[in-house]
Image (cartoon, rainbow, N blue to C red; front, side, top):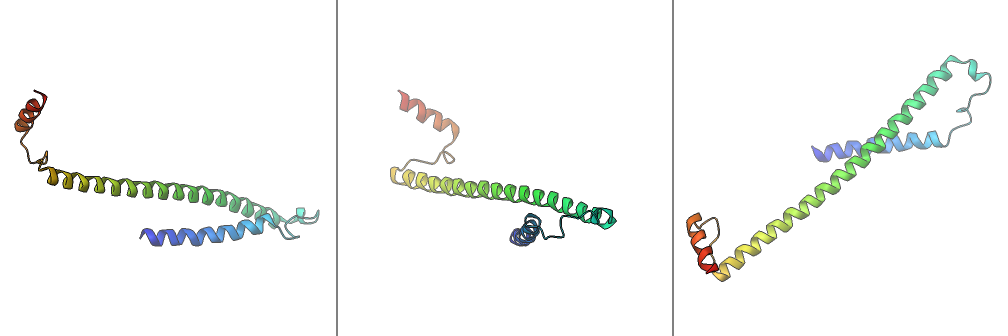
Length: 119
């Protein structure tokens, strides 16, 4: 589902970039002559171009937000992997030192062990 959404966004992005390029490098008919100002369809086309420009800005902002979220997600994966590795290392260290895991030791025993260690 996430993969399909990303593909759809990529297709939309490509379409938007194509439209953006057509807006940046306009054809000679883009700029109306004096006669075209009398044409009521010119206003409609102009409005459509302004709408497309606004849509492209929104698409660009959406792309930036998606990239930021992907970076955060990747960072979270790295932190989780590091946490798992540290937990595994802790377990192996406890096994080599024969130290019981804190989850297995009752709280009172931990207190006694801690007090004995301080003494």
